[in-house]
Length: 292
Image 1: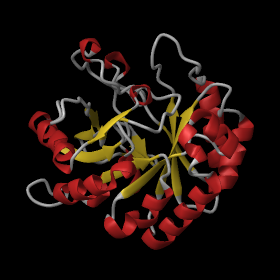
Image 2: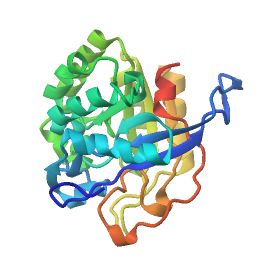
Image 3: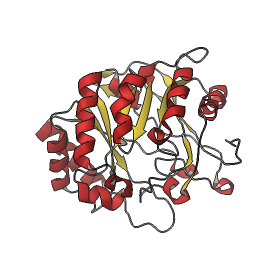
């Protein structure tokens, strides 16, 4: 999408059939659905080492109108059921525009249910402290990606400004006030944060919370990267520890969109390289996890 200031952002429509597969041994309800992954900024100042958007640096905030415009364009292509603020930018660093845009989306004519909207953050503590009062009913997703502060700082430079202890205290207060599950996003980086010890550290960190942990396979962000994707065996072992030892609901995000550089962590403005979307496999939607 072309912005008023001449910048470009990307939004991604994820189509899937929620009736495929089973839930608790029973056929899943629903049918074909679409989720819109929306951007809140041109570029991003968080600088996460595993994310292509961070290589752009921060360019500008989107206005509330430019955020909503992504939903307008997407609605012409597909019936959008869910909206996730997981595209370019850190939504809570553009807080006023985020709040105004969400209020427009939940009103006429869009009428998107708050429980179908998820906002993802690396952990902007002061914004989390007021998130529930300003946007009640929305889902909060936290890009945690490491269970200890030193590893988190290694892969997420912004974590230095928001220490893990302060973040967890803010999440505890948020959950106390909202009485809602928190989604924990955890990218799996081979040899960095995917060992059994990391799984136990994460389990102990989260065992007093009501959370859903979403393990995310690392998607390549160029021909040269300091990171590698964790093996399926490591991901499975990590999931089994969280489930079996700590009774934490844990899912593995299905990979989709790599062929168009539209997968998680791959959004970056590089217009000549973008090609038409191809068919993608079914994926469990994050809001479907929340409302069950």
